[in-house]
Image (cartoon, rainbow, N blue to C red; front, side, top):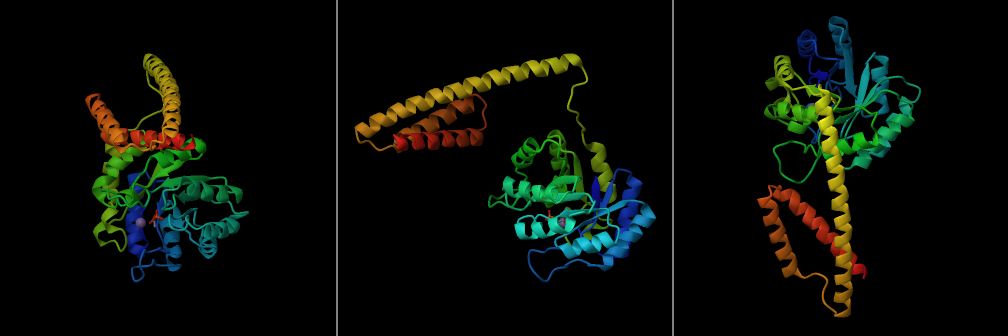
Length: 338
Ligand code: PEP
Ligand code: MN
């Protein structure tokens, strides 16, 4: 658990928050942003170097380890000079390979844990690229932090969770711990607990949660910060899960259901191959007869007919729509090659 305010604002704010978090007994690292990247100029841009001393005081008084965001080699150097225990690369820095490269170079020969937030763009390779650069710099303790993504679609979230991206990251890098930052995903307090529960259900390995002793007075991200008391309350209501069932019979049941899934997946893939063969044959006929590949009426009929069937069988409409569209696109591609 990494908890603490979005920004370091004053010695009192840091100490009050940190002491309450220490008391909570569930926090491994105290976080605070010192150099704040803001979307537009003119806002509070962080307390800067002087906050490093405030964090030293927090460490001394509470015994908590401290973590700070670094965006440049100079930030990193300042952190190392001031006994910061862990650093993280932010979502805006991660999008720029030049910046990441500079930080990676500065990390060579340094032994400090590094958290890597997903870059704001929903692109798994961009995130993986930052992680690879930091691994190549020789850092052994790395945590990926899922903080949601910028998308054009409107949603209740400040940053769309797009859970499929951290899941794919876990698939590609099974030994990399992935922790969830529900604060930046949510953008508002009310949504934080449901995101935490989802993260637990998806076997995420930890949390970074913005916490402030007076959230409403916070100079940055005030709507999404919670009090240390709210953090304790949140923690007590989460339902923690394990990878394995308590009873052997249940494990066996899950195993046998998984075999069923495997079987169904093979059938689906075989049938997809059959479908594509038929599509190809139709494509040849269309070509011989000089008929257009796209037949919008036919496509509309298919679409409505399959969506209706799916509805009757309880399949989510949006999901089925995506699937049918992918199928149709692929069919057109195949026929275009004929
Ligand atoms: C932060 O953690 O306060 C922060 C700026 O986050 P992000 O880089 O995810 O936007
Ligand atoms: Mn923040």
